[in-house]
Amino acid sequence: MLNPIMKKEKISVSYKDYERYSRHIIMEEINIEGQQRLKRSKIICVGAGGLNSTVLLYLTTCGVGTIGIIDDDTIEVSNLQRQIIYNTKNIKQPKVQAAKIRLDSINPNINIKTYNIKLSQNNIHNIFSDYDIVIDGTDNFQSRKIISEYCYKLHKIHIYGAIEKFTGHVSVFNYQNGPKYHDLYNNISYNGCNTTGVLNTIAGITGIIQATEAIKIITGIGFILNGYLLKINAIKLSFQKIKIKPKKIKKQNIEAISNINKLHKIKYISVHEIKLLELNGYKLIDIRSQIEFKIKRINYAINIPLKNLKKTKYIQYIKNKLQNKIIIIYCNNEIRSFIGSQILSSNKIKHYILKGGFNNK
Image (cartoon, rainbow, N blue to C red; front, side, top):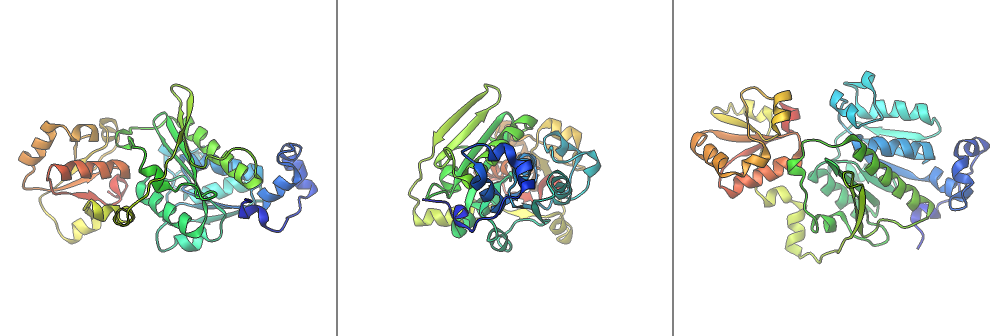
């Protein structure tokens, strides 16, 4: 069955297009028709970080007609290690603004649309409705959950990517009645809690594969990672395809997945709320690694890295020494915050998660 992208009215390829994309057009698998499909396609990239920095560059150079970028973040010097679309002069600029300027300079014939906002239930429907494919370059469960939910509702192809340390994951969801992100979520475990960094090249490799899947889907060529998870291991230099087996989810489980925070009784608190409520006697616990803590930290916070948090001596320390304190944990990674919260909850320690993590200090 043809993808809806391929059924639309043809768009002509000009001589200037031929000059730019000739190395695509001369391949019989792509040719003029494939380049026309690329030119009329519309792709939205959620996140403009390590993964989509690479994705955006390759989609722009290959001639995708309309590219959307959604991200509400600004560029920090630490981003430059893997987010290759930016340079030192872009520090403190909005990511979507800097990305558009760079992409326009590479290929002025592409329609680049930017959304300098945080993706949410309130705006996702209107944004996704205008696009054919969604490329997920986010790094937290909450965003992935929303993306998965609305890709399914709106019948959008969802190209997923994730990275940690030396490992990358890629899959394609909602393609020709294939699995959804929740099917993957139920079948693998994440080790994001111990993440202390990521190899810059694994972001590039993973992003290139995401872009490649988008190009193949649009042009109608090759094998698509539909129903499979591709695991990339840079240390072993290996690629492994794992079959995703969709599970029949009971009604009560669907409700639980759609509201994971409520299910686990996670409580969030913002810096504003702490000040507004005039809370006294609270203690901030930084669950990032010791290296991260030494580089930059919130005053008066203590550091208990997540890998140590589950150890008996640290649990006892919190129970004995901080029993009269309001415990607030924080991190710059939502996955680590979530798992840290579960460790404390399992030990019957009441606590909050600092909303926005380390970035909202």
